Length: 122
Image (cartoon, rainbow, N blue to C red; front, side):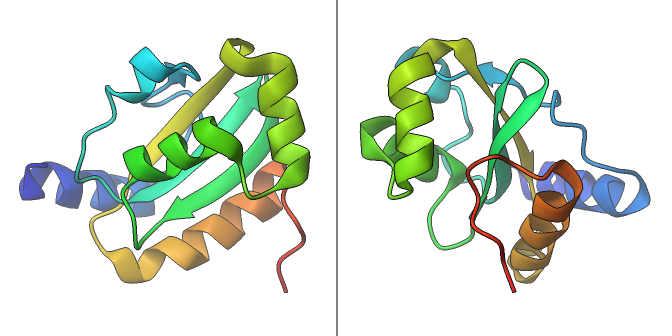
């Protein structure tokens, strides 16, 4: 990914707020392949306008994390949603240039969106 694009996205994020419909895709294999391969950040899975899950991609790319969820999520509640709703789910993601910010952003958006399948973070 172009570093200046990632830097701009991260800077814009600090100045405004992540909107889950930015960089939105349908949760299906062909759409997941559209996520930039080297992008790190946070992502959310949505059913209509309800947040189902907020996750982070700091050691693996967003594309790799979504692929893992597609194949079988580590979170049993999320896995049930994926099995039941599949391509009726959507994904929104935010590329973050400074990987040290990712965990804090994940916590912030779990608190904000109150996803149905995230475990409470301390």
